[in-house]
Amino acid sequence: MKENTIHIKNMVCSRCVKVVADELKTLGLQVIDVQLGKATYIESPVITNIAIKNNLEKNGFKIIVKKDEQLVELIKITVLDIINNRPDILLSEKNFIYLAEVIGKPYTYLSKAFSRNKKITIERYFILQKIEKAKELIEYEELTFSEIAYRLGYKSVQHLSMQFKEIVGMSKTEYQRLKSKERKSIDEI
Amino acid sequence: MNKPLSVTMFKPSDLGLSVVRFSMIQCGFNKIVMSKKSKFLSTPEGLYEVNEFYHSFLWIEDGIILGKYKPGLVIDLKVAKEAVNDRKKISKGAIKPFLIDITELVSVDTHARKYLASAEACEFLSAGAIYTHNKLLAFLGNAWILLDRPLIPVRVFTNKEAGLKWLGHFKYQN
Image (cartoon, rainbow over all chains, first blue to last red):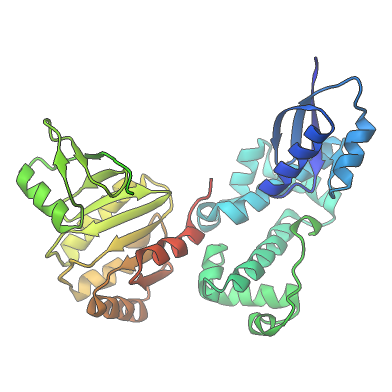
């Protein structure tokens, strides 16, 4: 039996990993490994690629075939990992070095591929994701705004305030006052 | 029900075993049983590799450095620098959050306070939680944060669990 690895778009968290694994198992596939952005399984003669594609798409995922798109997805996953799980990397200001190290390609190469596909730069994508994370942390009400700025690797709280206002269109205080806070799904950024 | 455990401890050569045992009890470790070779300590607190230094006990628990100053400690600049160096040995060059129990601390002088808020003292730290159930020490801790403005986020907690939860935001998540 032959192993097959598919690259999947919009997997952003551990719950996505579980959903993808469950969907593949539901189809009757023998799943070997599922990670953010990809899944490996034993090919089955009775389960078509279209069935796999349909099952994943109904959960908001998409199979990606093009190498460039796979690379962009890997960059997105690594950026999210840095923001959510690696405050040490954000604090050491080595985001881009770390990104290049993890993916194993020069940063300039990653940057060009990302800009070409996403129509925004990696730096801008980082900022957008950091602001979404800031919104999440504001809602938890466990950290002060200064602590959030520090946690996300900003040099000062003023810098975060400025970026927050530019991207969200309102100050942090105005955002806090909103009854229904508008949060973007991170896979839509 | 607490799980049984053993703790590995590196004993400074100039300290007698009875002193180590007494210090551990004073720091809140109880029911200490020393092995024949005295390299292991068992307590009902958890399974940790506790490193004993001259001024403190330090160990890593779930990605957070935890520490406890020894009873009666008076921190001047020299002691502060030594304590920071000890903590850096535990950090091993990785940025981690830090919770220090200052309940048994006696005093910290002005030079030490300024040093502890400096970039050098905050190196390899992502955040700091000062834990004490002593209200006066908590007040002094908050005054230090306000006046000396440490370069990393620091908060005083009278509840250790709350401190660890807050530090969780600043730790490397696996």
